[in-house]
Image (cartoon, rainbow, N blue to C red; front, side):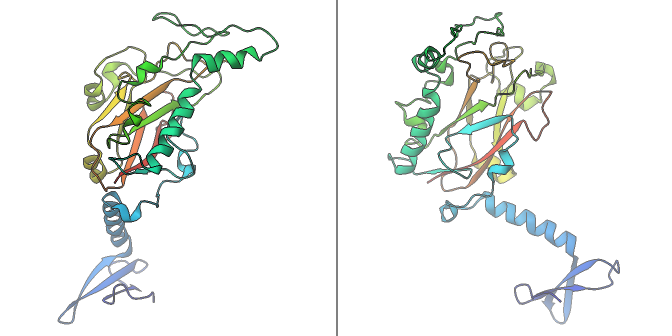
Length: 292
């Protein structure tokens, strides 16, 4: 017999209604008991645990229920990520140590897209190579020449000058498509996308890969508030796929701005790129957001 639960219930083996099934019995007074199967109890308990995890406060700000392994096979990565774990937690209204840490991490990632940085790297090559070019619509990615990525596409609010929104309590999270040699995505047509994804697209660009970010459960979905995606059409396919080792190549980026996340809530977030030829579990990345 297992240890008592809250002093009024025990887990026991009983023959009701199935001889082999574990049953939890609750003493409800007057000599009466309420019985529930082991399976149903833990389904209920898991739902309640999920509810309170979604609505937890700053007392848990150093804890994270999402492991790095959970994102290890994702097609996209997220930043800021200055250390292990998936929790992005900071204090709004001031340039706190955590906000500065996230800002510095985003600066490092975006600096690697700077034209001068890339050209400096290419100058170190012994064999002359083609430098990246500004690619126009209708101009696909060449096998031996990369396209520049325009950082202005990441929106006017999510910049170093604006502290990437962390001081204002409107954090920006950067998504980067992980490099896969020779792979080409198969985009959804607009009509194939779910209705809520269609409605989130302010600008429709055929052949792109839309991105959505939402809470992982109903509580998180309420707490996450409004989001903005830059560029609104998501990841550009034409200029960045397939990757074949083009000199100076940089993977495409998307910036997600969380406009009004509920303060003091631990919000578990799922960001998904909509693409046909990636399994659903690999097309999403998970992290936690907490604004104090």
